[in-house]
Structures are given as structure tokens and as C-alpha cells.
Length: 597
Image 1 (cartoon, rainbow, N blue to C red):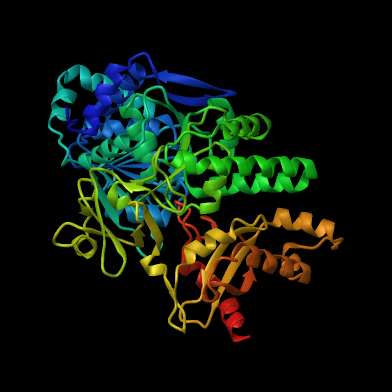
Image 2: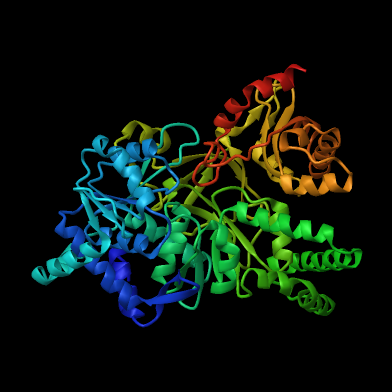
């Protein structure tokens, strides 16, 4: 039976699994569970509370909060009223928040704590359409528009007692065409645009995803990506809820390693940055280990890699490889698996390209990473690798309810029930990306290989065309560079220049260890990055990890920068994508000097 709306899906799951744990959160020193029946009750009271404030169909409710159970409950409660939620990253500043609140015509804002409340208070006179501010935590601040979360639940209880059939009638009016959310793009190239996604957009993506990858109510998800991120919203929020799985919320990005041990999840979605950090730590600890430890680890990884072609084709392993694999697991891989909780069936990676080398490394160790691809505008998944059909360096095979094709200029186009309704209040921008035949133009360049796997080359706007006319995809080179344990981040440049260069953010921790071995005197980070032996080391690392590149793709020069690209300095989006224009503008003098030499 086709599910008509996300609100209907929520109600169905709660009634099917009343006593089962729906959510888990950290309370003091341990995780506690909340059953679906309790979640159901809280969401209905909250929906009644929103209705008492006048929230109705197509109204906009802003959620400005870190991940927590109340985030999820507010989302479902707003949907029950026919309203659309507008998630805002908790890291955004007041001016950015003001733009989204005003552009979305929001009348309600839910904030998590005093820190987020102060951001709203700062712009209070500039967001005239906002009628109420709901605060989750108890705070001492007062405001005429403020109402506490607990008070809203009490108000909702009274409202529903007086309007007994309200929720049933409200949910029955929803369809797959109803607006569910407006998600503002993170703005790597300009002013954010409000992506309108319907109930049907998400439901179609859930259905396509479940046909591609088997998950069930027995699974436990660890949720750490911001729920404002469409990838986490669809997979770790809606999809997990539909199947009755348990979702455990990580305390923060910094505590993920600890929370993995506590929750022992079976599935986790992530962006590549997490895997890059884990990989770097493993390689670092290996380099510091004995020659015997290093040899054993390399042997085990070699065995793991030998099994991959068999697993990719779903073929039985030879007996000798079965024996070697069991030994490698007992001696090496079991310890690595314990570091991520010991129960992981697979990871799903999205949001940015995953290095082929890192994907192969984890899979060899028995920790399969299924890389997928999509955009906010496609709610989000277009394609994904499968448990029994995966290829490193690809983003998998399209979902079965999604159409894809490659345009004459190499751009990936997609069409289907996953494509957004359009950009809010921006018809012109909508027409620029959705053509008359309904094809959404992704802005990504790619191709299908002989087996139908989609391979992404780069963003169309990122492609470097050198002065010699060579087309170069920087993301691929950057993914090679960060496999060096001495390189934390990298940005390749060279558009309209004679050759490629790079901005390199080195691993200060690893450089400190290197200088110890070379008896280089203690120095500040700035002095360290000028040290000739450090410069030579980075250049050798660059040459080592980019050996396979064509001569015109190789990095001829580089700049070592002391400050990492971050959200705080405006060089990363909240989804951890590098704002290339911002970084290049920040270092324009150094870049000009580099090419002038």
C-alpha cells in the first residue's frame, strides 16, 4: 500500500512498534531509550501545541538546533499540521539566519538553547513575520514571543482535548504533493536557495533506497550528521523511522568515537571526512608500531583486498582465502571493528566524493562503505552502491525509481519523483536547473561505466581549464592528496594558468612528530611551514600519492597554509564542502606570488 504522507508514515510505524525503542540519547553517563509509543504521544501533543499557535497547512516552522530528539519530534509535529519545516544549521550566524527566516516566510522558530536563542534575539526587529519562538531548554531569558517546549506540550494537550478529531483530519488532508520542507542550500557559489521538497519526494527516495539496500527494524543507526543535512534527514531520520529501526543520537561530532562504542550501531551515514580521519589515525599508529606489527597489518590488508573481487561478484571465496581471511580478522581486523562498536554491517557515505583508496582500505578490513550520490534538490539520493554490487571510485547504480542520463557536455541529468518542486520564491532559478522535459541539471560532470556504475568527475563549475587548454578535475587530485598522513586538507588551483598548484593544510600533529625525528628545534606553526625539510617532505608526499596522474595534472608548486579550512572562518559550508572562491580570495596574494615566481 502506498503511503500518502510522512505524517501517515510516522503514525503507522508508531502503532506497529509501540514498545520498541525508537530513539536513544545520552543522559548523564549512559544511553537511554524512548519507545515509539512515547514518541507518538509527544509528537501529537506538540502538533496540538503548534495548532494552538495557529500553525496550519503550508506555514513554515524553522528548526534551529543541534541534533536531539526534540528536533525530530518538531519536524513530525509540524508535518502533522500540514506545515513545512525549515532546518537551519546550528553553526550559522545571525545574518545568515535572518536571510533564511525572512526568505522562507517563517512564523514559528524553534531553538534549542540559550546560545541559539541569543542569535534570534539579536535579529528580532528584522524578522517581523515571526510570531513565536519555542525554546527547548530552560533558560533565564525572557521575551514576549517566547514559549517553552514543555508549556507548548501542555497547551497541545488541552487543544487536542477540545479538538478530538483535529489530527486525524489534518493528516488525512496531506498527499505526496504536499510541501514537507524548505532546505536552504549551503551556498558554495552564492546566495542560498530554498529547495522545496514534498512528502512524495522523500517517500519515493525511501522506497528506492530500501529496494537498493536491505535494512530492517533490527538495525540501529548512529546519527551524528546534522539533521539539517538532507542526507541525514532522509536516511537517518525518515527511512530509519519507516522501517522501525532505532536511531541513537551522538552527543556531538567530537564524541562519535566514544558513542560508537556505547551504541554499537549496525549502520551509520557519514561524509568522507570521518573516514579520512579514522584512516589517518590508523596509518599514524601503524608508522609508530614495530616492523612486525606493520608487516602483519599490511599482510592482513593484502588478504582483505584479495577477497574484494569475489565479494563484488557475489562469488564463493577459495578455501585458502577463507582461512587467511579468518586469521586476518582474528589478528587485525577484529580490533579495528571494535573501535567502531563491533556491530557495523556497513557505512553509507555521501555529501562529497570518497577517496577510492580509502573506500578500498575499509572494505578490505571488513568495514564496507557504500558510497552514494545526490543533491538537496533530489531529496537526495540518485544512485548508490549495493551490498552485493559495488565499485570503488563510483557512486553506484541509480535507484530503480530514478531516471538518469548524461548530457552532451558530460553533465549528469536526472528525472523522477525525487526531483524537488522548485526553489522557494525563485522561479527563475528553478527554470535554470529543471528543463521543459523535467530533467534536473545537477551541475556535476560524470559518466556511466560499462556495468552501469555512475562515476563523478567533478562539479561543472570546478573544472580547471589550464592555459594550455587541458581540462582537469580538481576533486580527484584532492582526494589523492589527503591520503597522505601529512596532508589534512587540499585545494587544487590552476584555472587559466600554465600548470596546477595546490593549497595544502598540513597535519600539524604529524609535522611535529617529523620534526622530532629530524632534530628540528621547536618552532611556531608559521616557522614550521617555512622549514626547508618540511617543504621537501610535503613535496615528496605529493609526488608519491599522485604518481598515476598525467603530467599536466601533477602539482608543480604548492602553498602551505597554517589555518584549516573551517566553518568558523567561512571556508567550509555547514556540510563540510570547501568554498573554493572564498579560499582562493583569502590566499589570492600568495597564489599570485606563486605563479609570478
